[in-house]
Image 1 (cartoon, rainbow, N blue to C red):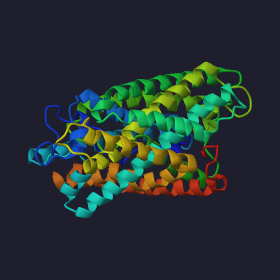
Image 2 (cartoon, rainbow, N blue to C red; image 1 turned 90 degrees about the vertical axis):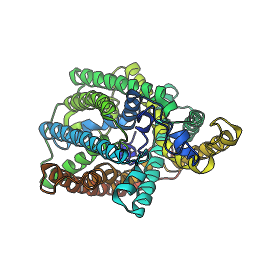
Image 3 (spheres, one colour; image 1 turned 120 degrees about the horizontal axis):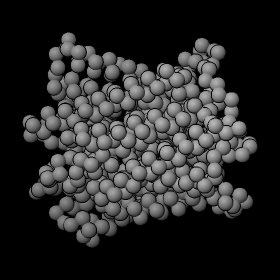
Image 4 (cartoon, rainbow, N blue to C red; image 1 turned 180 degrees about the vertical axis):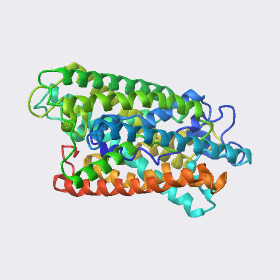
Length: 458
């Protein structure tokens, strides 16, 4: 499972929280000037804990399995400190977005779409199109990556049961796409609340399983010698540290939060604290500088026996597979909202023939397109990594602080204004570093690229 496929897990629909945003208020546009995208897909009936489920699915994913590799580039002290700092900054950014939304709502401008909020606060029509283009591109990329990596999980289990079996990667991509096409007929974001609760539990499940496997591997006689030293080359140390920062930043990103979300954020970050630190610490402790880009690969080396029981690793892979389906559903919502806004009629029922037929057709075609891209470009994760670094970090780190400084206008010499400016500058640099690291990886992997390959390029 290529971590680059999840470098783009942000910049997605700012609708992750909309399902829990003011449960008793109607969605904008529910009256005469009905907006079907808001009335149907962004249906706002949930509670704060439903929003917590959605946010957790958006943030906590198989990227946590890459975190030990991020520590490898910085060592114990700097790695844990950087992870904690980035997690704190993202929480701070989401709280700023909640304040900006409350500020606009108090003045009669309630928003449930991040692109409309950005255009309102920044007062620039081009900002609306910038955000919608970046959101659509990145969320489509994550949908493609989720299909590809879910199919890769099935192939891992299949090849262990039938090493010489006839099925190829594209067969499993078709299977995943069919399942997602069926689940995608759930009409609204609110209707995913139970799936996202299961997703939350799955993330806790594979975190515990993988961490237990790492502890067992670290104590076994086959464990690699524990070496936590960094590269002797200063330039290599610097590049590895920058790459690690990019990985950590990407792992903690999600679509910008919307609405009165503090309770949901606290719930979400409680899960993050467990699922990020436990595998980071146990994985790096067990394998040190020899840890691979995905901790599962360290536990299942190409040569020699697996370092954990087969049933445990198989169950962990199954949990990852099932959560990838939930992630694919969450990140498809921005496309569904845009399509439904233009194709559906909010004055008729969401299950009326007038709305049901276009929904079935358009969502199925969208997933067929994503499946085709996943089968054709099994190295798509590298491409998404570049797009994610360019679009993801601006939407999650840069725009929120700019919008807060403009909307709430703190004094320019205040600590808050200066801190926001520093965050903007630092993470603009992180985005540039991430883009450079992703492009470098794309160039290094170019020799492995092959259309419709049966292997996912890591």
